[in-house]
Image 1 (tube, rainbow, N blue to C red):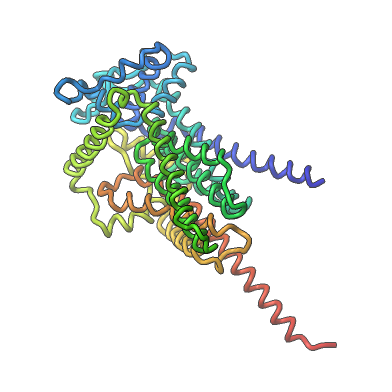
Image 2 (image 1 turned 45 degrees about the horizontal axis):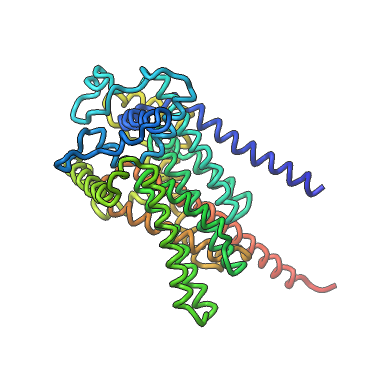
Length: 460
């Protein structure tokens, strides 16, 4: 009987995910076009060169004898993580679409939208849909992961709250459906966080974590770096939460060999990080010729690109107080308003007015969600505010993992909405934890009230 009950609820969980996934897929055609999608699809030709034609060496030589990029495409190959382009390339290969669907070149930001269109720097409609289908598949899988994370912290109720808020968030929908880095960033970022939390949970309960969890953490960490380089914030958060948990355990247990324990852990974390870097290099032919030199060039080029963007968009760059406010406002309160071309304004407005753009929270509901998230962070750090029996290491670990993401967003001067996408799943989990805390406290207060009323009743 218990098995039948479990099976019935399992089917309900599956039906909930399928409903959310169906909503994600049905909204694909209504998203406005972003020029970065062109570049990702254009670079997905590398899949043909590297895997189908078996000529990966052609992608390795990106610098000329003077140390300059041979072409703009070579620069893109270095600064754009390659994994998503591979996924789009394989999706194109499976679809059977002709190569004529590929754009003729990368997008030229110095040229108007119409000029790029006339030059053929835009994918065919069918290929754009296939590429978005690949992205949305990864996004749908990330919904499964955040459901699992919610379950880890509060069982089915928190899992349903977290996955629903995440999947119906307008930011998640618009940026995750596009043929860009964001969907794999979310999927592998959340997987990296999940395995790090499972490691600290098992370490707290059983004294050691199984080596397979370390392998899973390392592989997912490498894949997120190969998905988008800023996924480093997820990697940093995951490794930091493991280190902080070990530090707390060592001093709580008054271990005699604290230094030895921390050195051993440090070696594990360093080895894990090194293998993640190896995975990134292995998947990036643009790094093969000279990994150290090209990694340095990657960091330098990315820094120079960011500096140029800050100068071009100087009127939109935000101050420190504004960035701190955007940290909470972007995920829930502000509408999706990021478009790049005047030609897309009407398309974006039509999409926002459709049923496929998610739940528009608005200022009031958004404020309530922000307050719940803040309360959830407080409850994570204060055990009395949450139900007993849950692993303290999990809650503290989630807060620690939040810090690198928060630091990156506060330091980033460009208030581009998709940059804030990494904070959406984190704050969504804290919203669920906050709601769980309030329900628990209300139940406790009600129980005390009933107990007090019982004591006041006269004995008969």
